[in-house]
Length: 530
Image (cartoon, rainbow, N blue to C red):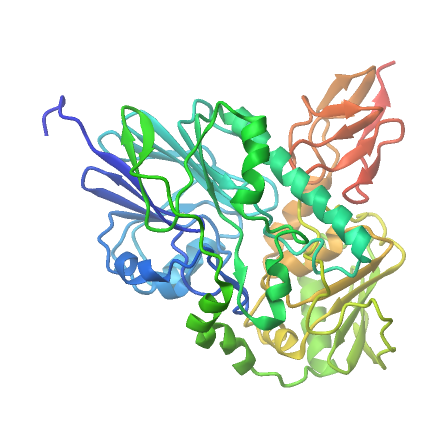
């Protein structure tokens, strides 16, 4: 090809956080998701099933999967692809993604750390970005003859580490966690918490747009749709953290009128013309016929009811938690808490200590549930676990007082104990109900459950909470520079009425005491400059 010849570039949207980036004859497949995720609970929205055969049979030159969450890591789809396909893989501490890819038979794998780049073709380069906290998520900057496409999906690198001068940003606008909608809250409290989370999501998105100087934005990576009748309450756009783009767009336009919105539906193509993203025509509104979608996918969401529901025994649960505790002793140093698990007609107390007691799990008779309790096997109107951004940490030095309950359906608990699902997958399924008193997110407890299968991650979680020697000076105070929750730089964080708010996940601290007043219980190191 002569150096003066113009190369054609385009980006096909295949649903959720999935794209096919085209540069002349080169094809990069990104996060293809078609099959149900998280114990058959999440489905892509809108329905992209009409693209499955085309995507599975497509010819590609490289594959990038951002992380192991199954709304990005679709094993069924990945098994349909040639194992000779080159893979771009993030260098996560746990190496879980690398192992998963190798387990599927992919061998041509390029592992990239945070900020590392690789040329794919003349005029085409990819740069890996990582969430450098304990969370294992990644994003990709793709440069096509100078056009910069930043695919953040649902990854949140530090705002100060995001690339600038971005031509097209693809990033999450909807929630993707179980807080607050799986927790037991009175309806007025639930509405308030949902509003707070949605406001925080928009604030984070707008800060991301500003940090990247994004000229155009593609709404993506949410919301999912819940087709199982037991979960359809979570499709409520008003009462949950899963808004549709139409619900968010007016606020986005008001906050960033200079940013072009590239609103596409699965199957649409974005052409790069003159360094700008151009779509052929305005897309049709997203279809909302959930009932029809559910009929088409009944065999898939109905597969959850075919999972084994043999009750878990006390001995099985004790063996499970004893092993989990032993593998995560650094996280649990000086920590203790009793966790209640209810499943079917069974109730257990799990005694979490640095060294597991013998036994670690004790069975008890379940009490009668009060009328507003989260029923075993599902949530009431409202709830998703406290997200890494909106509910906060636990004290590492001592277990917080009060109660923490998990209402886990027998099928889900069986899948966890048998190793068929992780707690993270089970929580994201929205099939677990939660109750806590006081209403504080215990990072240590939830870190143990969510990441305990990969102790290198829980070790990093504890490191993230450590007080850094590096400080900033603001308002006559010497303040810890990096957020103890996920390491965000607090140099330019907002301070209002003596309260500092992290711009990334919106934890907040009273600067007179360093006490965390929103998010959790981890304090911030604060001292007078003199």
